[in-house]
Length: 97
Image 1 (cartoon, rainbow, N blue to C red):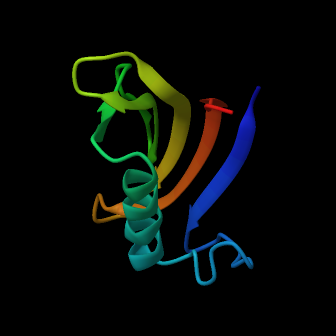
Image 2 (cartoon, rainbow, N blue to C red; image 1 turned 30 degrees about the vertical axis):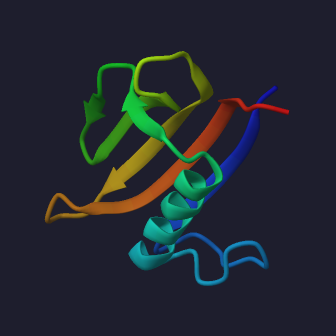
């Protein structure tokens, strides 16, 4: 089941779930929340990084360091002129029920 998208970056709207989610601080807080929900799990990039102009995409997962992934998804990112992330749109493809 595909869930998402989760949007982060200057153009992303704030919501009740993630107030001010357009900031890098909000993105870091969201990632910290995921790691708190799944203690001991580590994020992994599971694909090559495709890059074209100022856009990148890659697949990622979350699971124990030596076991199977329990969360999988794909992220699409836009890069700012300085090479920093300008926005991230993420889709979750696999999530535990």
